[in-house]
Length: 371
Ligand code: SF4
Image (cartoon, rainbow, N blue to C red; front, side, top):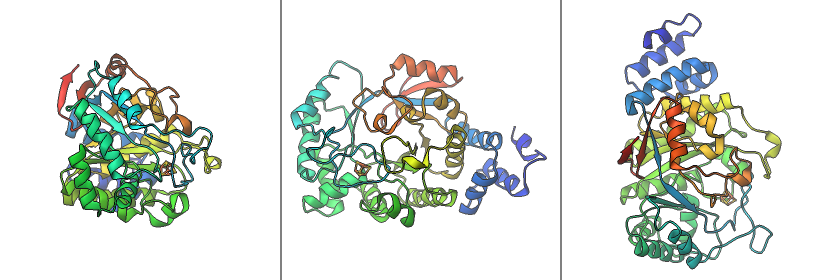
């Protein structure tokens, strides 16, 4: 199959050079990443991304059993793409107490979940110790539940509000029970674009610094990109290049998760949304470019189940987990799946129908069960 791609008469010499490098396991440059976006057709990109995916993971497709808690949608920021944020007292605002959140955890007492994913808005009155006490309560109640919590944007605010340096704050949160950090808040690293769509919140440098310091103190993390708004291909490659550089230094990222801009109920609605073909192209280029981040995840509630299945042939090896309807972030932005729940059986079938092997994993990709 490798030769099939390289020998195609309709592809340019620069694409042939890139394919040869990828098949040899060599890293591609940022310039070559942009060429892939601009000149690679879907069948070329899919074949190349699938080569990388199968070299890393064979036919395995990972999922986990998790649930989400969103402590609040009250947020001090006003990111233009956000459909979720509310001000204190505004219609549609919520803020759970510690007891509310512990009650949510208790609803899963007899269920075989391995992870709680806890993210929300940046509440002006809540600091590291407030959230730390929640982590502590969850760990006391269910010590083996992995807590993946707080985007770098939430972390910057809660740590500074408590008067700690970033490194001290991360260590303190680890003591409270933080196991890993999700990838949110990255949006797009290019400073000009970031200023345009979410200029007030954590800078690119802070986002990267928090993840680097987290890796240093033994807290692994994920990374995201928000694509399909005002950014261009060079911005996407620049974003991935900064992650690739950081990963070379720390090795602390597990998974890269491209998040598609959704147009409902936000200040960028006029932009519309990119096509499914663009989604697949983006997965493929991400898999080819990010040679040092092990996993590529498709967030199925956002792109829908069918596109997720197809994405398994465009570099994706992870489809997240069985999420219950406490996840409101994407539904409020107009996600494909307005009630994002899927049973384990549903996930398994989705993967099998795409001729892949479903593997239940824990947060750190230790395999729990092959189906
Ligand atoms: S994207 Fe996050 S930080 Fe920005 S306004 Fe929405 S909730 Fe707040």
